[in-house]
Length: 219
Image (tube, one colour):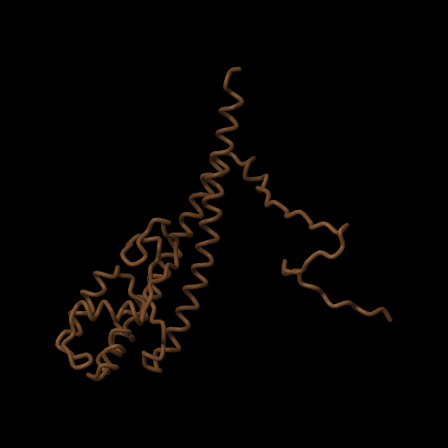
C-alpha cells in the first residue's frame, strides 16, 4: 500500500537548497471579463445594488447596537461608588457608543459627575483619561485614510467604542456583548467585500472609458 506523504505548508521561510529549483511566479488576479463587457446600464445596476446592500448593512449594525444597549445603560444604576466601580460605570456608558471622543466624554461626565474616583471628584479630564485607558474606538465600516480615529463621525465608518477588558462589566452582560462583537466583525467582513466590489466596478468603468478615449483620439 502506497504511503501518503504529509502535506507541506509553504511558509516562505524555507531556503531553496536545490539551485535548479525556482520559485513559482505569483499569479496576478484577473478582472472578471464580464465586468468589462457589461453595458453602462448593467454596471450602474450592479453599483446601485452594492450601494443598497452597504446601506442595509450599516442600518442593521446600528439597529443591533440600539436595541441591545439598554441593558448596558440599565446596569450603570447597579454600580457602587468606589474608584473601581467608577471605571465599571464608565465602561458600561462607553461600550458600543458611536460618539466621537469629545461628545462621549461630555455625555459620560454628565452621568458620573458628583461621584468620586481615588478620593477626588470626577472631572472631564479624568473621564477622558479613563475612556482612553480602558477603551478603544474601532471601525466596523469603511473609513477614510485621513480620518481621525477618535473624532471622525462618518456614517459608513460605523465607529464603535469597546472596553478592552470585559471583566469591568457585569457577568450578565458579558455574554451578549461578546455575541454582538462577533456579529459586528461579520458585518465588517461583508462591508469590506462589498466595498471592494464597489471600487472594482468604478475602476473597470474608468478603464473602459479611457480605452474608448484612446481609440477615438485622432492620430
